[in-house]
Amino acid sequence: MHFPLYTLHFTLRLMTLLQALFLGTLQGITEFLPVSSSGHLVLAELLFNISIDPKDMQGLNTLLHAGTLLALLIVYAESWINLMMAPFRKDEKHSAMLVLLVIATIPGALAGFFMEDIIALHLQSLLSLGLAFGVTGLILLLGEFTPHKKQSLRHRLLHPTQSEPRTLTTRSVFFVGFAQALALVPGLSRSGLTISAGRMMGLDRKDALDFSFLMAVPIIAGASVLAVLDIFTGQLLLPSLQIISVAVATSFVSSCIAIIFLRKFVIGRSLAWFAPYLFVISAVTIFLAIE
Image: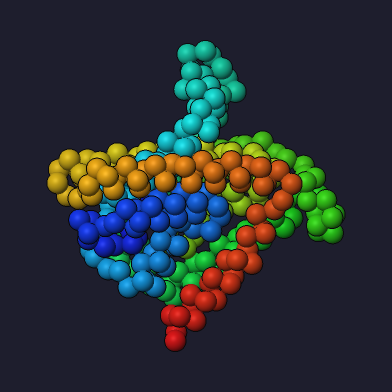
């Protein structure tokens, strides 16, 4: 995931409801599945030869992320209520988690602030996307099979649901936060990198996924606030109210489906199952780049 996304850039006033439906659905699904939302959106832009100044699409991208953010807040409503109330309830467990989330957000926030324009201008070619898709696939495999658990590789393959989970520490969450910062690059999946980083730090799949999705909220919210400020100052454009409604609704619904699906999926299966898809799309994209 990647904030803000620079994707499918066509003139806003000419955008159709079908295009808004497509954008919202693609954003919502690929935002949480470990396949890179920005990579897929930029790839679609390049394949369909749609091009307009990237800045002109930030307004709609903000709306798409608003749908995603709403889905996260609803699915994880209980967790966020406990986190926000923890200081007032003197809840040490959730207060500690809140501090860890702040630490995990720092690398991504700094990278977004200083590297946003560089990434938008220089890392959106087909070759760059293809390489990034392949790297994401490799990281998914590394997250599952790095020797951070005592079991042998054979045991992990035969018993993928068995693990020796560890707890979150300042060191581990900063590592996960660094992974989130890397995911600003289109083609590098935010969920894939952060969940895999959590696995490398010894977390079980569900804890790694839940922390990844919790830490997505402040980074998405922060990027959205900055973009909204640009909208109010006239630096960004917005499409019609009808287009806004369709884009946000489809982003919200598809995000909810993707979150719920992945939370159930990781209980008994590895994210490494997504690696073959990423290797295929990586190969196809690189082939198109050098053709």
